[in-house]
Length: 247
Image (cartoon, rainbow, N blue to C red; front, side):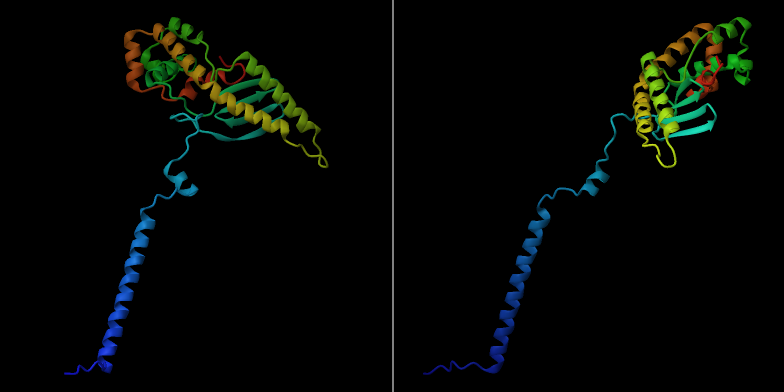
């Protein structure tokens, strides 16, 4: 009995179709395995992605209301300038430099209230009227000294030297030979560093002054001043000493 091995056109087409499907199935399997392998590998994050997910916090910044200003020097009038850099500013009047921190320090509310009581001794307001400060208390409160920014004598002298160097550089510049701004940049950079350096001493001063004020007031006056919510602004509390001739 003989078996006919000749393939018909229909069976040949069916075999080709099956073979093609098998090839496509194998390709799909290899592609899928390759994609899974690639996606399963740990890729280092791009610089942009890393910056978004893990922001870098400068070690000089504090979790407070302070903020860093871009440095600038502004002349208000002859002999009257304002220098701002980092978190501090300087009011230059003639040859005198008055320092203050540009933002709000994280002074505790109870200390801020005591600082505001001291201000009320100089400038009578609703708080002073409510507390009914006596003449003796007002005199003692006015005798308490405070500054907006605690700066050592050495740092003050250094800033005076940098300011003089800036003026010399500015006065020497002309239209044909403009200033290189070397002294200006050094002044601004030094003030920015000094602003950070002065934060802790200034906060310590606030605590000491608050205790002095507290020792002058009666318990009832302390309760009123604290409950009233006065003294939330550190700058207002120490502003009277900023300008020339102020207490």
